[in-house]
Length: 363
Ligand code: UDP
Image (cartoon, rainbow, N blue to C red):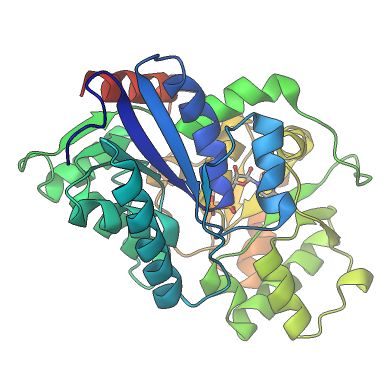
C-alpha cells in the first residue's frame, strides 16, 4: 500500500488495554519528536471504564485517539473479530506505512492481523516474550503477533533469543533489542507520583490479580482470597481491584466490604507508582507489575505457575509461587524479613521508546 505523501511516515497505533496506554505514553512522546512521523491512535475500547482508560490519557499526556471503536465485553472470538473488522476500515481509510501494536491483548492480535492482510507492515513492541502456557489467551496473542510482525522490539536479550529460536531472524523480519518501555515509563513518571485518596497503612503488601486462570475459576479465586486473608494476619494487604476481578468476586458473594483485605478502586499510573514505592512487597499475577516491582526495588510474589519475565525469577527478585495458599503465605513471610538490594540493569537503559522511534524513523 503506497504512502499517502512522500515525506510523512504514517503510523496507526492500536491501543485497547491499560498496560498499552502506559507503554504508548512514552513511545508516542518519542515518536512526536520526529516532524516527519504522524501517529494516528485507534482505541479499540477493550478497557473502557474511566479509571482504566481516560484517566491514563489525562495523567500521562497520551494524545487523544482519532478513532474510538467502543468494542468490549465480548468473548475472545467475537471481540477479536469485531476489532479486526473495524481496524480494517480505519486502515483502508488512513493507508498508513506502519501498524504499531503493544503487548499481548486481543486488540494487539486483531490489529496485527487486519494490517498484515492489507500488506501493511506491523511493528510489535514487547516481542519475544513467552510463558510457554498456551492455555493463556495472552500467550496465543503474543505468538501469533510475533509471527506476522515485520519489526519486533524486544525488552530483553532472552526475548531476542526466543525469536531467533523460532526462526524470526532468518526470514526478513527485523528484531531489535530496544529494552522495556515500561522501564522508561517508571523512570519518567516516578517524580510525578501521587498519593492515592485511600488511607494507607504504614507497611503493606500491594496486590493485584486479574488473570482469567485465577479469577474465572471459582476454586482458584477462593484459594487466592484465602491466601490474602491469611497474609493480613501478618501485614495489611492493599488491593486495587480490576473490574473483571470485582465481577468474579461479587459472583461468588464474597463480602468485599467486610474483608480484612483493603480493596480499593483501580488507581491511575501516578498513584500506582506511589503504591509501588511505599509498599513493602508486591503480590500479583500481572505481567507489568512484576517488572515495576523490580524497577521500584521491591520483591514480587507472582500468583501464577509460570512467568514470561523469566529473568526476574532467575535472579530471585520474583518468586513465582502459584495459587496454593500456604506457599503464598510462607513466601511472603520469608521475604518480609529480607531487605532487597537490587542491581538495576535488566530490561534496557530506560530509553527504549527513543530506540523504537529512531528505528521506525529510519524504515
Ligand atoms: N496499574 C495501574 N492501576 C491499577 C493497577 C495496575 O495503573 O490500579 C498499572 C500497573 O502499574 C501496570 C499496568 O497497570 O503498569 C499493568 O496492567 P495490568 O495488570 O492490567 O495488565 P498486565 O500487565 O497483566 O498485562
